[in-house]
Image 1 (tube, rainbow, N blue to C red):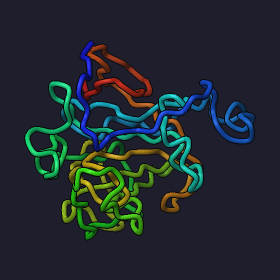
Image 2: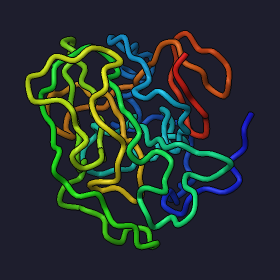
Image 3: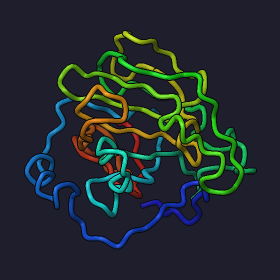
Image 4: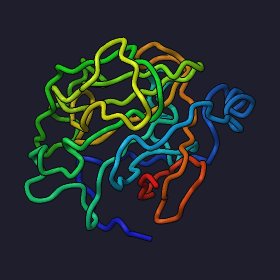
Length: 236
């Protein structure tokens, strides 16, 4: 298994001391509804290369989005980037283009319809200080919201300005290129934010566990599974 020795300061995460339980209604709602949730959509990873899971999973320990107070839509969200030799960038980390994932192709994770999007938000300038120069007024930055026609909706956020290749109302096919990874919105550095939710409302509704098909996690082939924090993942 690959080891991460050096990680960009842009992905410094606050650590919480808590048990491996689900969140919401003292755990009851999650236990009843989401503990055994099976994704309806035939999802595949929305990128072509190997990426690293900085945040992701059903537990508090793995899923840092559990602690976001703006609703529960991001509860099971993923933050992902490309890591090579223990780092997410090469050279001057203050330049977006020096981060391996910046400008990388992103694909539709499944068939669906584009029901919301943004393409004109500037990418954040990296000052070297976490939370400095973050765009709090446009949380997702440039984003794409896909309706999968079954009560599940995919959100891909923080995309590169001007990179979105789809329009409202477009029908997209799984694996179709739809944009590029960026650093727009409430983002401390170039990465992809992905989550599945049960509502067509932007950053609202209930977040759903996202199970992907036919991918490798740390070089082990998975037929159907949920990536978790600290794994390297890529499509089969």
